[in-house]
Length: 172
Length: 179
Image (cartoon, rainbow over all chains, first blue to last red; front, side, top):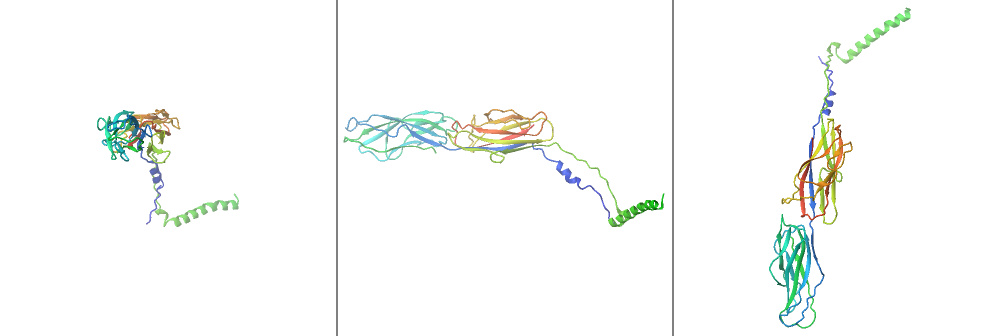
């Protein structure tokens, strides 16, 4: 004998619709990307050193050059501020002295690698290293001052000699 | 009563009885096999409060700023927060943040990142109407209208980009909760 049931099945899906889970809290990932920047700017595009005497051992005047240095990713600590000549001058030694560094808000500074003047050759000579002031020391913002002079290694003929001095700042 | 009207009065009861018997016969083997059960039916509408968050620029649930370049001006992300509720009681939205750090553990702190919150479209009140540094911790940022109705507002994440920041990618999360 077949039985027929009259049950309100439609009520079941209606019940399911009324439920729901509360979401009282939710999180959003936050990501900030800061791009790397490096900058080195010399105070002058050229420099002239003058020999007032031509004999061996004579010395030129001293010329100061300043370099604005900035980086937000200065990771290298040693051999940071380098100098080299493209070619050597005949019978002349170019000398440089890392004189000072003025920090303009970075958390690291440049300090001279060796006191006094050092002779610049065709390979990189380290003039300064990096020293951390606070935190991670990766921000280098300041002005370095380098004094230059030249010494005659022999008697010099009158005339002009031109070469190229390259300053390199190694950040990382 | 005329013969005609008497005949009409006798017709309808017989016709209805015949129709009922015919219907029962078609629907089931016999009229005695039909059983009906009446059940009580009720609905329960649960109290629900939901919150959804979307970045208005990307459509994603994430705040991403950068890469920031020095000297290129400020950057901003806007998150829209929508609260749906049927509870009918006032609520507050709290924002909890940690520290913004890169994978090496370096902190991007201070006032490098700021935020403010708009008023709600349905009468809610911003508790951070002006930009302030986004510092780690928990603070109330939005209060609903007293009626506690659904509302929508925006949270503006700002990078003034006026100071030098170490390069890299910094991560944190913005946790919004309703109380």
